Amino acid sequence: MRKTATTLQDASKPHVRASFEPVDQTELILERAVLRLNANILGIVLGIITGLAIFVATNFLILKGGPVVGPHLALLGNFFPYYSVTFLGSIVGFCWGLLSGYVAGFVIASIYNLVVKIKSR
Image 1 (tube, rainbow, N blue to C red):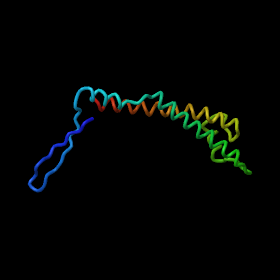
Image 2: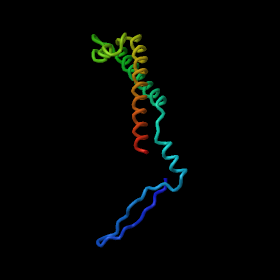
Image 3: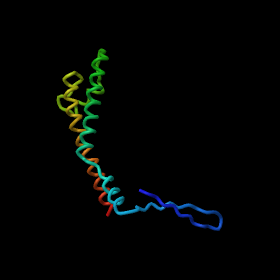
Image 4: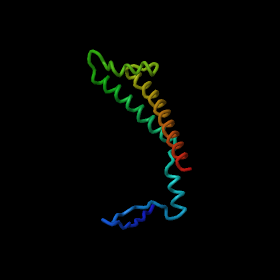
């Protein structure tokens, strides 16, 4: 988007005011198209990131070992059924993270697109 600048003369000093106006209709259409998010893509990306974070954190604690392995991470079992701080639990945690991350990303993108739609009216 091109920006045009105009100067305003004041009694004390000149000021510059930037006017943000699209140059033609093509740029206006492009600006509106770029503002929308694909809810499915954002959901998949956030789902994969969340699932991998749970998977890596669980396996890190398993490899670290110790007398009590991951008591704080084990609290995820309250939200994710069948999750535990074991290798099998890390796979279950990945699946639950994928699902919850997808839902969160889909909701975030949908709300964002709704706000953009309301704002562009």
